[in-house]
Structures are given as C-alpha cells and as structure tokens.
Length: 346
Ligand code: PBG
Image (cartoon, rainbow, N blue to C red; front, side, top):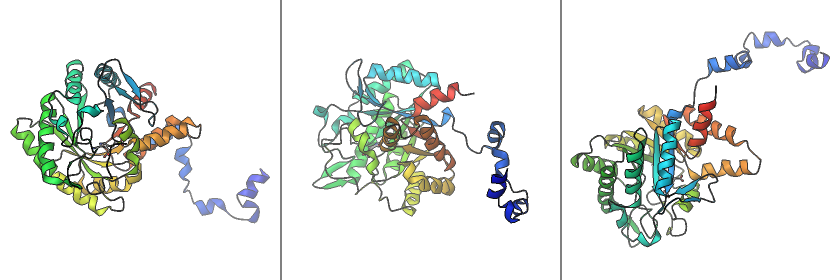
C-alpha cells in the first residue's frame, strides 16, 4: 500500500481524486461486458471481400511464397474456395488470374477472350455457388507481356486506347457472370466509359467498384509474384497510379469516379493510407472500401512467422483500423481466417 501511495503521489500530499474529479476513463474498460457495451466499431463477416488467385490446370494449389497461406488455385479448387466463402458467409470474392505467360502479348488481347481463365472461373463458380458476389479486376496487367495495366506506345501507357479496351474487357467479364467490376488501372475516364458500355450491353445491374485512390506503391510486390508480373514489369506504374505524397488528389479522383457512375469507391493500399480512407468517407459518404494489399498481408505474416507478432490479433487489429477510419468493407487475404474466427467467437 505504501508503494501505491508513493506512486500516486499521495505521500507528497497530492490529491489525485481532485485532479481526476471523476474523470476516470478506465471505468468503462474494467470488464468485458462494459468494453463490449461501449465498443464503437465492430468487424463482422459482412465487411470482408476475399481476393483469390486462379491458375490453369486441375487440383492445383500452388503456394505463393511471399504470401504464406495464399495459393494460386485451379478452377476446381477456386470453386471449393467459393463454397467455403459461402459457408462462412463472406459476401464477395475477388478473382485475379495468373495468365499463362504464352498467352500474354503486347496488347493484352487475352483480356478480351470470353473463354479466358478468369471468365471460366467466374462461370464455374457461378454454377456452383449462388450466394457469393463475384468481383473481377479490370486492367490489362495479367495479360500484357510488359506487365502494365494499359497499352504501351513507345514508353507511354496510352490512356484513351486503353479505356476502349477496358470497356470491352468489362463487358466480357459481365457476360461471364461477374457482379462487380473493379477497374484497377487508373486510366482517366474509365469508370464513365465502362458504365456506358455495360449499360449499352444490357448489364445495368453490374456494379462498379472503382479503385479510386490507387497509389504507386511498394506494397504490391507479393501480388505481382502471385500473378506473375513481378519479373516482367517494365519500369514502374508512376505515370498512372497516384503519387504517395498526395491526399487532395485522391478526393478529385473519387469525385470524378462517382460523377462517372461508380457505385463503390476504394482506397489502396490500406494501412499506409488510412488518412485517405477517412477523408473520402467524410467527403462523400458513399460505400467506401479499403484494400489491405499483398505487402500488408506479407508483413503481418512474416512477423507472425518469426514469432514477433500474434497473427490473429495483429490481423484483427489491422482490419478494425479500417472500420474505424470509415471503411464499409475491406479486401483482405485474411478474409477466410477472420471469418472462421468470427464464426466461433461468442
Ligand atoms: C493490378 C492490380 C494490382 C493489385 C490489384 N490489381 C497491382 C498493381 O497495380 O501492380 C494489387 C493487390 C495487392 O497487392 O494485393 N491492376
């Protein structure tokens, strides 16, 4: 008791109660029931979008070395993953193809093949699973030999020609059965063009989740391993993805995407850009998402793998941060792990 009195300064005649005057914020933290009662933000399974990599072949689960616990799945395995998502009640899965290098060319023409890997995956999953939304990326990088999201003329990624192709890609994906089109390419004007193209082709119900504020980030490294563009990418994507120094510009990007018809907007990467997420949610009050990208996942997995962080707690805390910053949902490779845990939690 003396030690306590000493530490509280009571021995010096300091009146702690007078200083605090009833302002004891720890009161509501004392018990579990009370912490639950005052909790402001909750992570639920309905917040999760699970990104999945698909690859040609059968019964394949090829590990992605830089993303422990993540595999490239052949279509039959992707169907199983979708069934698992359905059981876990995960609302949406997002599909990303690893395209056979032989099918990649300068023009990314495989993107327009209605029978390409991702279209076949969408069809197979749709046939097997009815209650999970299917999101697909729109950009040319899985299909181009140079690894860029757009068409290259000389050293330049040309905007308008790329947009024309992205419209066709979107229609091909919608025809396969995709529910959400996610343009991740950062060309100007693509959301409006895609919306017009989808509507004209009769896909008025297909949603667009715009990668509105997508930064030229180092955190996409493991993803590029997963889809096989890490080695082939010529140069970097700084002439179309955003400069990490900028915040106001993200607001202009989102404003344009919304004016052009985006249903949902997204910030990417996630944790290094929580300020952007907060600002976009405050500015527009529309469904706003965060993408916890491959590098963020890899960092947490790597630290956990070394015994430096508790995997489940670090993952949960990182996802809760998105909720607190205003996200309506999160694309995360942790989705199945977290959904599994939320199911068993009391
Ligand atoms: C490409 C695309 C990227 C990601 C999603 N779509 C990478 C890039 O722009 O090079 C990154 C996702 C991740 O890192 O998890 N259009």
